[in-house]
Image (cartoon, rainbow, N blue to C red; front, top):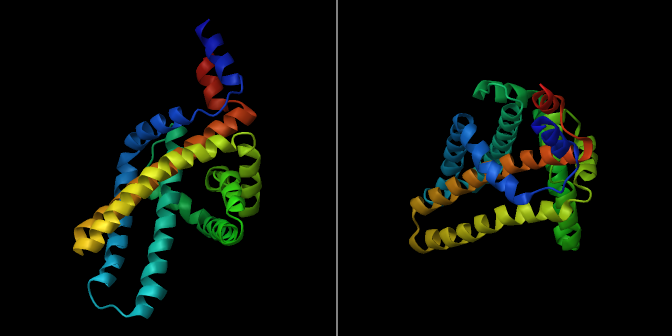
Length: 245
């Protein structure tokens, strides 16, 4: 009787539960900590080193053409590695840092291409019609998990994300808002303190916070992708096996 009730719950499409995803995000972040923590610290160290341009003399061309692009690329790869780690965890596989990077290496170029496409499209939207950029953000919110988790190309990932988020975009934006607003407010306060006191300490805290919340956002994005797939297509084979075993 219990398995029948559980199967009925999984097989019946239900709205995305934002609060449940937020709670599960913390639990998933904890269980993947041995992968996520080294990624956070490594990416933070790179970002922190680029921040020295404000405290020591570094030529502007070196900062603009080398340090800042390097940091941005590494940050994007950091987010991708976290997403892959979450996929592996959700599948019940043992995960390692090397495995995540090997998986990411095979998808690096399409992944970076997707990020560039999304970035340019949303930037154009914000420059001309802000509401258009918000709509695109909601449509394409799970495009990266589609590419890294389902092995699709950039264009198909965008189309897949638009299909999965259809009917759930208000909840998608709610999730993004709940994660992004505290991130923005705390960052503003720390930036003000950093500018007032000119301390590397506040700069380091801002960057560390940015990476921790970035990792959490990547985790919740992947969980949202799973729930949207389940809502559209039903539970996966592993879930059905666990229920009817």
